[in-house]
Length: 312
Image 1 (cartoon, rainbow, N blue to C red):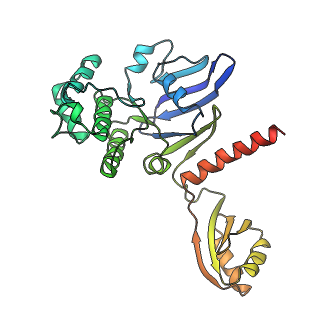
Image 2 (cartoon, rainbow, N blue to C red):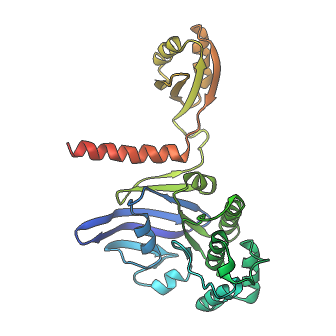
Image 3 (tube, rainbow, N blue to C red):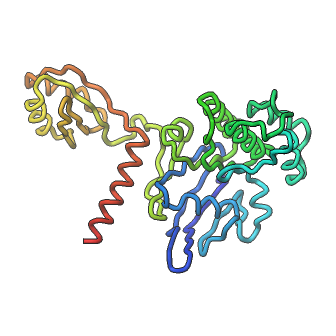
């Protein structure tokens, strides 16, 4: 797959304050890429640089091989975006709003406007005034304008704001449609971690203006070095003692009513056998799946601990 978005060693400072500290990542065609971080981490500044609203002080941003600082028009011709709340003309209809955006793009047919209205679920309301739209409908219309030219890069900042559960499910469908059928690269920034986990292939964690990690949201079956299991037993102390002596058990924690154990990948049958051999009654033995929220908190809290340590 080709690289659609390439961010290389980008830095941004305002006065003496360094906001973005040399971040690098890339997004390939067909990839849905999540961008996560706490408030003040640098998400909004990064997005504003991606769409050419502000310039980086150093580094490069390329879209379809075009440097956004040197070939801005060519770079942005491949981009559809919703940054913050989409601006719409309330006195115009949904269709008229899309027509206004289509004029800016210069090459959007009436058929494409009708197609987009259907994709975003506004076919029956597209001729109503936007001032009569709910927040969720306005958000759908904003997504529609971003889809008009079948962009190679779709940038979405908090795209599910105001959407009800049905709207959120439709949003996932639309994003996957763009990634799979149009081979668009989709870049999503959101504070709703569960939503990012549902729709994204890959996530980048940013904190303090730095990319802390870029990870797949899918488990790599057979490729991990360790996996986590929960164990319920009638004799926690004996189980803890047994597990702590096994060379393929990396970590054991007593979580009051159960044990959490990090073990070497593929050794769960051995663990169960050793517990039974030592007369440990195993009531439950199950794999623990970490959520994106768990990982997010692990990274953010880890950074906070570093900051505290460095200030001592």
